[in-house]
Structure formats: C-alpha cells, structure tokens
Length: 299
Image (cartoon, rainbow, N blue to C red; front, side, top):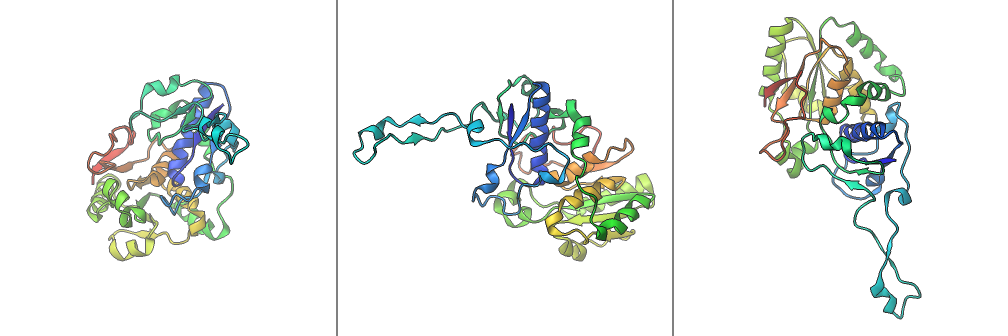
C-alpha cells in the first residue's frame, strides 16, 4: 500500500495523487489517500477543500491505523497517581514517511518501497510520466458539464483557434507568504503572450479565466476577440480546468491549476506559454516544473 497526503488546492492535490499513483503502480499495490489535512483548522489555505472526487479516480481513503504506527507508552505517566494507565504518545511521523529532499525530480523516488507514505508537492511531470496514459483516464471528469456551460463548451470546441489565458490572484495577491514566494504575474507578461500567439497563429480568440475575473475584466483589455469566463460557479472550479483544457492553446499563470489544464490538453499541436521563473527569489529550484515542450516566457 502507498499512502499519499493530499493538501492545498485542487492543482496541488492532482500532483500529489499523480505521484502516489505512479509509485503504487510501480510497486503493484494499492494507493490510498490521507485527507486529514482538510479536517484540520490550519488556516493555511482557506480556499482549499478536497476536490479529487470530480475525477474518475479510485478513491480509497487511508484509516488512522494505516497511517500511524502503534502509539508508544509514556513511561513518565506511569508514576502519576491520577492515571490508572499510562497515556499513549502520539508518534511524530506516519509509518514509512517520505518527503522530497528537493523540489526537483529525483530518480530515487522510484526506488521507494511498498508501505511508503508520501508527503510533498511532487510538482514535476517526471514523477508520473510512467503512468501518464492511465492518469489521463483517471483525470477525466466524472460528470458532464452543467447545462448552463454547454453553450460555452460548444463555442470553444467550434472555435478555429482558441487560446485559454489564466490569471491567478486570490492568496497570491493578499497573503504575504504567497505574494513573496509566488507573486502575481504582471499584465506585461500576458500582453507579451498575446504578441507571441499573434506571431504564431495570426487571428485567434482568447478565453480568459481567473479567480478574480471581475477585476481582470477591468484591468486587461485585449484588442483581439476575447471572452471573460464568468459562467463557472465558485463551488465547481474544476469546470475551469475542463474549459481551459478544451482550448487549443493556453497561457498559464504560475499556478498548478492552469498547469493541469495545459497538461490535460493531449493535442501534440498545442502551444503552452508558462512563466519563468515559477517562484520568486529562488526559494525553490523550479527547473523541472515546466515540461520541456512548453514555451517559457519571462515574467
């Protein structure tokens, strides 16, 4: 059994699941999910909730006993006159706990044994490349688009040259931790991306997505045909991944959310523009985050 700890937003969960599936397949064993993070009052990501049930994955959830080793007896409590039995000591780490030694891909990942507990981001395609075909099947959407999105789905599918563009705001803009290490991309990045696509495609239509779409509609005014996507309900954010992945090409934000939209587009002709560097200030070595076939554009 391989257990993977899920945390953060949907894009992060997808990376964590993908790495767990890859290792479980290599060890010919079962993958189970630890979703306890979403029950904790961490306050770290108020937008985050467990979201993997939108996909056709096999959801098996790890139990407490499967995650934690048997508690040890606290010998100091044996002498307490107020306890008839010594209290157990909570173990510090789960059984078989493994966290990545680096933000980059490391080949030693595939040598991890059965009964490993994965606790990390694993944000590189190399971690799950051996199971990419299976992962595309499992990351297909469990449900059809809701009826009110059907016209937009048909419009995107009929568009001769469609480009998704994703703006990430939210905690990147208001939380000092994320604004320092991730940072909001400038409008200049997106304008240069438009110029790049004009050189490559000529005419095209932009479909613009954001977690703060009203603000983006006020700030960003492209001269080419465009559609600010406001039809998606906040509690169905996965529909934005669905719609972005239907577009022929994509301009990503520095966000795992649009990373997966780009990856789920299986067209060999797709053009993906991604920001570089992914992180600010060299906080992580992000050289493996962007696949080699995607185009990096300075942020």
